[in-house]
Image (tube, rainbow, N blue to C red; front, side, top):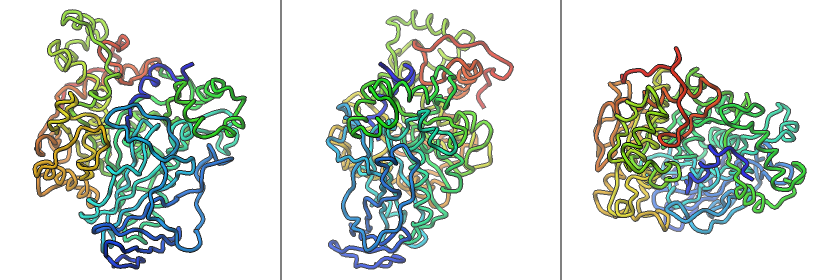
Length: 557
């Protein structure tokens, strides 16, 4: 039995994813340890290179037993000095399919609400970046070697990397859980974990030498989606100052009790899952072993997602941004050129002939068929298949976020990542989904075992250095810049963007007409209340509703 609609269940494969310090004592030697006295308690970290790393710091009480499916509760200050030199567990998650994102066996525990802090030597009032890992809200961990923060530390930035509850443990909504809550809502526990982690950062980071009023959140894929949720959620307001969205998406979300846009309500999904697992209610689910629960929920098709509950998430993301209700902070957003090469299940097989393709598009897109075929022509058909899905999912969302943030008067920056290298080309992947992450972290030699190997050449390291410069300078003062690349203009300057190809190159008007087409498609589907605006494009798109007074194709501008 599949718990979600086919629209959301299909997307479950998207993964494969991803001395001198204030209050610190110790010596900067290879074997030294450092103790910081933070409001949360004293912590002993390990000095590594030019940074001190504090690992597996609990930011909330363990979400186990009766606290399973409760909002995170504050961790009381602990006694004595806590050893923070060893990596902690990942949150519970099912096995991952083989592929570039698979990190092998990982240690897991339901008691997983922890974060890592990497602090540069001599940090004082340093900018802070908080990394939210991706993995479809099903997989992932803050512990990945690819998320090592020492290159950030070399640029004077504190990196915080967080765990949050995943899968059924992080996002289940159910009528019984709503009844337990004073606000009569349920779901969004993983999102509330992220809010709790950000609150911990605001309250504790000054003890590490960080500026609690200069916090940038950033994430890729489901981490980017989480960043969008945090931008939209009133619960996160005031807890961060900038945001970076790497390959984010703006799909429809289930509402707590209402079926809309082809989505069953979140409570109905939770009720169906409970029955599918042979449980009579929440008490039975709380009694289940966490690993068995997570594995069985994934097996029957449960796909975690944020829930519109009127409190934590008030509206569909597109509506929140249309109303200007999101956090008023500077934003960077972008996507990769070959997103879909590792997500090919999102792109359905196309007709075998150019004629059949053109006919099918005209049937499905009616008056928008010509602009669609201009962007995604009949030849080369394979490229059109991947590009149309890429743009419907990631391209449109990236530009929409930048445009909407610009509309509320915030500096907004768009990028397009097309950088690749021999192993990725030979694998037929190009600049695949998440391929920018090791460059953002300067971790080109710390990728997972099955990731196409990045050459350790001077050119690749220079490119990674430019990426690090742009990301960390944005976190410092809201302006991305690099000594190894051109000035990055904000989007309001003639639709400016940064092309991150062989080396960074400034440009204007990325893919003219792309945003306008997919915005019009989304607008018409949303107006009906009966169609989702997820990734279904081309040969798997439902027939497009007709134009309305509020939904008419605009010319590129």
